[in-house]
Image (cartoon, rainbow, N blue to C red):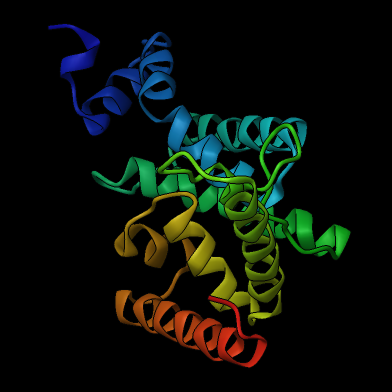
Length: 191
């Protein structure tokens, strides 16, 4: 059987029996989702890479010490480790995340569905700038869920596991975030 055909739990069992090469398969399988979720929160490629590496060092150390017991939940477990490292970083730095891409442009500006005029482009950029500013005004728990859902494309189940709350709490935070954004947009008259 090829490593790609094993599920995560079987790969971990193989790793624990001394097969180091399975780590490459676990990395290949999950790197993109884990790295993206880190990057979308820290907005810095090198910092995201550092946190990603720190997360996998913790994963390896936990697996080697025999303390891993997250039956069938490898990805949410690693995402929770990475998320906690991001939180630790922000606590140390006392700064808030911004929504930008690797080259410094706004992630929201990358969403384009038709050929637009110069006026449309200016209006869209201004709207996205306004929206980004409003997102920063949300309470941290609402901002976090909104970023994880819309920019990291995580399910509410994954968000709930990462933030250590129930799915209903994660859904509620998203509902409040969207409601608060709508209210702020009405006040600012943003379409």
